[in-house]
Image (cartoon, rainbow over all chains, first blue to last red; front, side, top):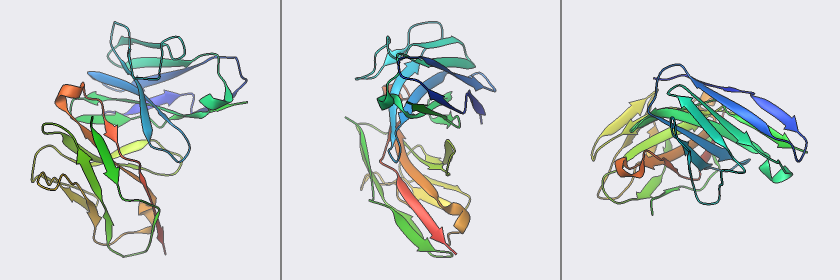
Length: 112
Length: 113
C-alpha cells in the first residue's frame, strides 16, 4: 500500500488569495488525482495529475482556477486560485495504480 | 456514463447488529468495485475491493460480493462496533477510464453502544 500525506491539513484564507496544497506519496505511483469534497457530500474529481505534462481536468474545472503540478512520481500540488467562499471544501489527493488508489487525509479549506 | 447508487442514509444501528449497505452500479464492460471508509475528520481508506464477477472482498469483518447479474456490491458485516461509525463510499473504476474512480453518494453509519 501507499501512504499519502498532505500539507497543510487545514487553512483559513481570505477571498481573492491563493493556496497551494502539497501531496506526497511514500512510493512511486502511476496515477495521482485531486478531488473536492464539500461538507456532507461525495467526492468530485477535479483533475488527473500527469507526471511531466499538463493535468487533465474534469468538466467544470479549469487550469486557471486549479493549476496542478506533478514533477515526479511521488509528488503533486494543487493551487486554489483567487479563492471565494464557494471554494470552502475538503481537498483530497489520491495516488496508486489502475485498480487500487490510496487517499491522503485531506486539506480542510475555509475561505472568508 | 458510469454511476454508483448507494442506499439512502443515515443508518443507525446498535452494537452487534447486522449491517447491510446496498450499492448498485451502472458501467460498461467489467469495472472493479470498491468500498472506502471515511472516519470523522479523516481521508478515505480503502476497505475492500473486488475485480471480477463473483469475487468476494473482505477486510476487518466486512465483506462484499461482486454480483454482475444484479450489478451490485452490497457491504455487509455480521456484528458492528461503535468504532465502525463512519461514512462508507461505494466506488467503481474501469480500466479504460484512466483509473478515474466514480463514487456513490456515501452512507453515514452510526453505531450506538
